[in-house]
Length: 461
Image: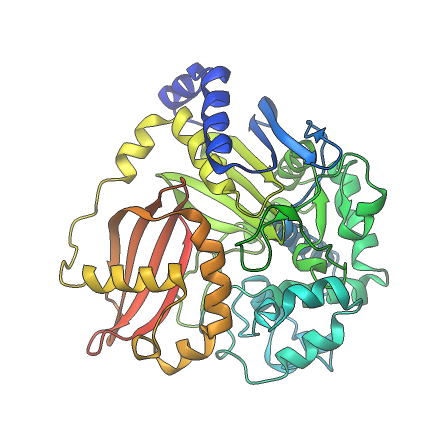
């Protein structure tokens, strides 16, 4: 249960104050349309809607508007795999080859490693011309298989790296084991028990009433706001194809945590950090980011498509869900989430902005240099280990820069911790606040002798 004082403070926060914080954030982001829901113990606190779901027809967003939720889909895919595991139809420790023997590296990778994002499979959304192919090539399978048919990025289990390929292929496993399509399985075994009556997939969009058309500013984010190209279902699939509403995602959060979809043990597994071969824990469970945000325990996942963004965040100790859906790629749903949390718990922002003791000030200029390289896509090969050079290709850097460039300039860089338990490398973690309200943890692993980057991520903070 929540501590009594925290519960009283949170309860005293007026709906008007929360609404004002949401309005300020969404207005500053200048998104086309948005919907934001805040729930306490599964009960609606407030739902706010803004802007337009269809600019050409001047149709407003309402509480039932359906948005593309992108990678939030991964929660549903993970739950489907765990359902089949609990039914004895598969084991998450089975090799992928048991179900998809011809898939590249299938004998080297387990389903658990796919779920925990520690497989080493390269991320297919990093392939050249991905935006064009997603809207013109009906069947993604051949392209994706060809792309990942090369050496793994690392030995499975030795490193965490986010890859849409992991969840795309898990959707194929669901289909093979269940004997039905991934989409039909999710409708029957996930949406139905969770009471999600307004959810579907990108393939349904032409038949969906009250759909929020995705908008973007072109592939380089430098053009006028316009409808984004329509994605073909086979590309996002189990990695990001679901379309949903604020209310349905709230119902999902409650159903998932209460045993309606998977068991309590299954949910505990899904919401616990993955473990690497060396025993180190990651910040990712199974389709869920697991960690602390502004000193509050948090289980969440964000999502993005070419023209929509989403955040589904649960604060288990606070019995709080914050759900943000936007239909413009320049939005920042994480900033909206933070604004809500800071309105309910104003002391959290003060505490999290305090630097931790023990910072090595001689390292800070290098960290700032690397952060600038990530934001602008200008990381130099000389700064990166050979393995990191393979991961952070010019195309991958370009994609990251297009996304992070929408955050605005960094306004605060706060040291949070370092881990020097390894003999030859040290991890450094800094909390980064950006001008447009986004917050990220910049996690960098440096070689102690050379200062070369051997690991890096800019993760939700």
